Length: 149
Image (cartoon, rainbow, N blue to C red):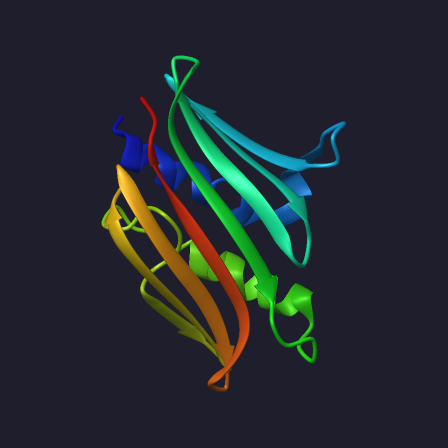
């Protein structure tokens, strides 16, 4: 299995599908989601809820080979954070091999629209995602990362 294929399985098999239901609380106060398959393992560890900050790490045979850092928050408190994050999970389940960092370039359902803009490759990338409700920005997240040697 290639790194990009594993990332899609790990991302869709953790937060995108289960949200906070499958996380483990660690002694330092962080929350962690994990996924393992074959020679790869994935860890998504974050602090906070709204706003939140975290890091995803992929290990191959126990050695860190890829990482992504992120910081996100809702920007309009009139919208329930739980509703925004439920829509975010749906968008993140649409992750593709072309851009395996977060969700698709565009995803819409009901009043919500997810938009992600990124540059670079799996080896070195950065990007930002946002969620709009009726063309009004309600959520934003910035991320960056790449391979580790």
